[in-house]
Amino acid sequence: MSNRIRVLDEVTINKIAAGEVIENPASVVKELVENSLDAGATEIHVEIVGGGRQLIRIADNGCGMSQDDALLCLERYATSKIRQLDDLEALATMGFRGEALPSIASISKMTLLTAVDDALEGTLVIIEGGRVLKCYGAARSKGTTIEVKSLFFNVPVRKKFQKSPAHDSHAVQKVMTLLALAYPEVRLELVSDQKLLLKAPAAVGLSLEGLSQRIHKVQGDEFHSHLVPLQISAEGYQLMGYIGLPTMHRPNRLNQYLFVNRRGITSHLVSAAIREGYGTSLPAQRYPVFVLHMQLAGDLLDVNVHPQKREVRLRQEQQLRELLQRAVGDALQRGQTSPVESSPHVMSASLLIQQPLPWDLPNAPQAIPKKAPEASPLETLFKPRKPSPCVLTTLPGYLILDPASCEGLGAGDQGLWLVDQRAAHQRILHDRLNAALPPKAIESFGLLIPETIQLTPLEMTTLQDVLPDLEKLGIQVEPFGPQTLSIQSIPAEFDRADFPRILVELAQELQEGHGAGKLLVERRMRIVAKMSQTAVLRRVQMSLSEAQQLVSQLFQCDSPYHCPLGKPILTCLKAETLAKHFQR
Ligand code: ADP
Ligand code: MG
Image (cartoon, rainbow, N blue to C red; front, side, top):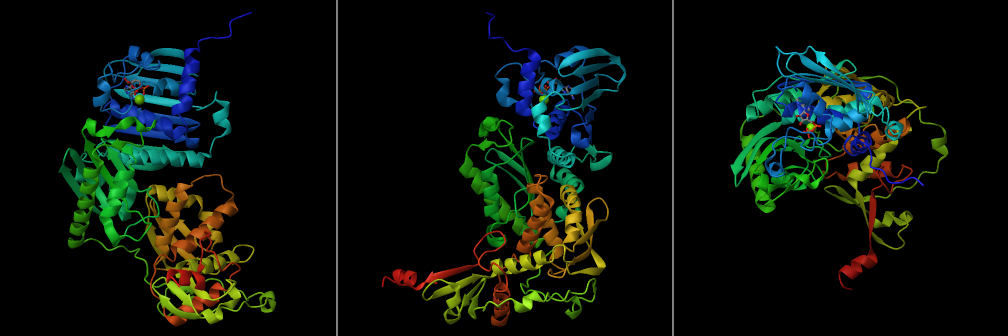
């Protein structure tokens, strides 16, 4: 009988390693660009085709490799970045395990063209599935070009679970955005299917000025003009960068960029400390934006907490937390005293539901009716009307119903019914928009003077993917320059002043679940729910008549008890609970 145990061959080992590090084209781009940065490149050009699965080409002007090194770098544990274990602690470069290149080479068809000197001949190596097919002299200026074709061609499992090219391209764009913010002094370009997605000329360096230039290029005018600088240097930490004005808050942490020793990371601690620094100037459950670079002595940092090195643990947490909180507070105060541009996207303070007849709005002369409202269907006449309870009084954010009118609500005996005004408003908006989904036409009005909004490139690509869905909701927006959308028409339910803001929010939300393979309709529903939610962020006290109108509209909805996201709209403080509370 033959032996059953065998040592795996090198190519197989590399393929296994690839499975751990190389998830998608974006991880290839990340590894290769980091190599270019480690090689001292000042210009890096990235091109992808078909989201990167067809082709990834990375060209740099770094130090290049000799012919020997060009062959050696394809071997496992071959690295120029570490010679012994002691080096690990002090390591300033990105990767150090010497496994990226052999891993990528083992699951693709790769060519490597590299030269150490403009005057000397370079080297071309052709590899397929980890095996070197050819190696010969070839011309190239100093630097390295790596082409990765047919990624995962020999990994059937990965091929099967592949995402759409749009999704892959988006992920690459994210990686490049992160790297661009980490290295302002390096010129970076990203081209996807011949479309230029990122063009960041070299900024002056990693300074407030350099970072500001880079943020402007990468994130656009709108983002850039709502930032205040922050710089501290104390207690072993150096922190430098920009934080957003309190008016620029977001529904998630996607626009929180933190770099520790140039490495893009997430840190719960830093995120929370910065949020605390804003105090009450930000609404609850909203997140500030920031782009911050932190330099830490190696002994204040645990890098290897996360295999992909995205999460780091910081030592001396408490000091850092206090330091950050104070610095943010100070920076915001300074930001307020110096004149800053006011946001064109400030939400309107009104929570009133606008009557969807634009020609009734005296302050909206720019609005022209696009479609006349449809006559309400006959059957609604025959539908028994639900009696709507009466409002007793209002509080900021809440309404209290008159107990005498609440008998139909089904809480048994008497009690005190409270309505969450925002959730109620969401339900109403949601139902209105949904009722207008096809086959019925939505009622929208065109803007005589289209409104434009500035977006970050990532927000822009996300929204561009859903333009047809938006159109079905009565929202017509068109690209108007690389980072600008022009809003042509909006649903009558929404306030014009709120709308740019709503779109930015939507882009943010969709980015989180981008390309999750959702059905189109499902995605549209999500957009509707989201738009309803963001339209009613503020909690102000309503007048009694506004409140009554809201409650009447609410009780015309099919499910007046829960908002579109499943949160309760109504709650009842039962008499017995009250009695218990007062120890009766
Ligand atoms: P690591 O980055 O961990 O050392 P890699 O497999 O990513 O491992 O790269 C192996 C080696 O190949 C690097 O240490 C470096 O010497 C060399 N190398 C890779 N990419 C480049 C590049 N773009 N320019 C110059 N040298 C490179
Ligand atoms: Mg590397």
